[in-house]
Image 1: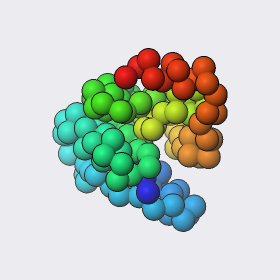
Image 2: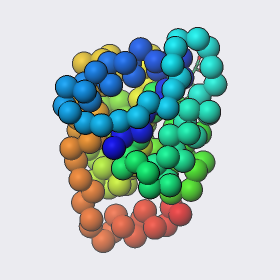
Image 3: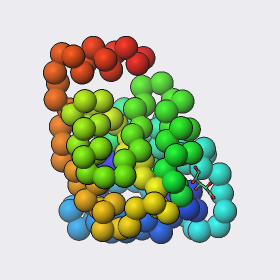
Image 4: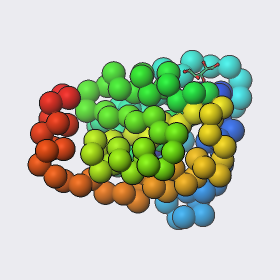
Length: 141
Ligand code: RB5
């Protein structure tokens, strides 16, 4: 189960991503925001981050205008490794190397076509489980 959230800047891309997850038959919960009305990204970033950190959700997807603010907010929650990705290489590498548990995207940065490929890459790439990466992740906490 995927936890997904955005602010107003990521709202439109979030609709595209949820439609894509529906097509793939993947379950998710939308933690808001629920319109394009101006709102504060930390609220949604932290809601998704806590849902993932608590173990209720396997991973999360967060979107704001740039992906920066909402990933910074999510990364304040212990146990969260939110990765802002602008291409598929980053999405693959952050799963293999960082075991990132939240993907952050910029709704004003990437188009829907690329964003959906990034989402698929993130969701479909397992952690490498290599010792050096596990050691480095441990070092983050
Ligand atoms: C909202 O205008 C914008 O600041 C927000 O979506 C995000 O880009 C912040 O990092």
